[in-house]
Length: 608
Ligand code: AGP
Image (cartoon, rainbow, N blue to C red):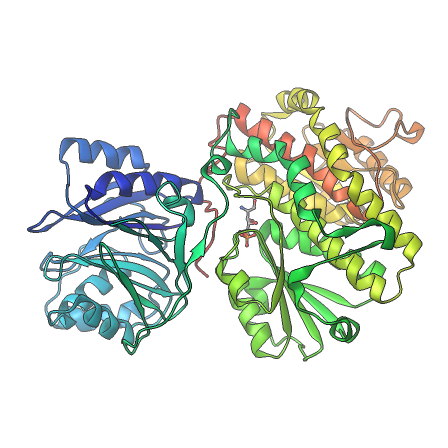
């Protein structure tokens, strides 16, 4: 989703802006632009489409200066055209603004500004900010920004430069992440640490309500009343190599192949094999608090919501606590039953998903204790939750989530073990699950070793128009996830269902043109799934079956088999996820899709 970068220092800003924007490409965007103060005036260059087009525009007409801001836009208000691309200039051209988020009262503000004679040149809500800051400017850029924000409703991560108060970038945050990067004789601003990591690891994360003034060799953070606010300097620990492709054709493939390591990292130092439990330092829940949980709500979006469904089954089966899984976007508009004895688990790879963050805040407001299962360290959810479990999957760049999903399921399994062992789970069963977790990384590697076979299957089905994914029990959420992966990156229509639900409707779709992926390992519901495979074969559907044994019951029913190792039922979705990710990946590549940045999607969805 939209990305912001800012540079102020002794060097020409534009190369830093372009480099930062490229580092954020993975977030998804459809236009880009920069604004640079050249000592006299603000120069903007903008382009619809990829950053390469912006670079081409800059090559023809360079923009040089020591202070600048840049932006990648993911369209919300108005199509992805050059005129809607950021930065937006004030009417007099002295103020440039880049903005992530949505100004909810932009219509009212626009009408008021038009009354004053301002003419609008774009369809965006952001342009309102540029004119409003011009209108309120009396010599100090930060004062004008603060006064403008008093009139603004909505969410923003924004950066502003002005030729009338040069030598500074003013930034403000409410609901959309921003951080200051502290360099030597130069400073940076970014919405994503990856944008500045090549230059500094020292960062200050801004909080909602902060306004920052960034100069070449100092910065300050203010609140909305212009009072200085102390903020800690954090250090980013992961390195740039972790966000580069390392020889793989795509980030997605690299991230799929990283899973033996990321699954291991999610458990590192946490699994206590001999006690059949887990140690989770960050959850901030006492023994009594763990015992006093009456119910659990898990809320998330997309892939993270699928892992939530698996977590629900684990916690109910082993800890015997009622669990509800809610789409974060729905939860905040319901009247959910939440008490002080409700534990609300929030799952998010990015830690910035607007719907998930809002759901967490709503659960907190109603008195629940919140736990964030988050990958990105220092993200907003991680900073606002009451406690949490980091996934330690490393940066996930591919828009389609892969390694974060398997790490989420591992983290949920660890949490379930901890919770369940405090309650009813016997040490024997706890040990069995802990041992199975311990063996997982090697088993994930075994699945990856079958990638060539999965690529062959992809070749057979690359022209399909529809796909059905079916599974039962723990593997039903896996079916949803398999379908989501395929549609996200290959644009093939795909649906996931509980296998037995097929006969209540989707079975009407089955004919010789319909590939059906079954997740059918040897588990508690295997025999039931075999009956469903019969139903598909009887209607000439093509079956791709992910299974874990040489099963006589499958004889004659399987057109394409993918073999995965065995594990305990609750961890099977982790092993089954890998071939589903690979199948989606290879099909998408064969169809020529932009796998890492599929159309219309953003890595981090920071709008409601
Ligand atoms: C996953 O492949 C998707 N791109 C998407 O559904 C994603 O899982 C969702 O937007 C939630 O993101 P989060 O985990 O960062 O909160």
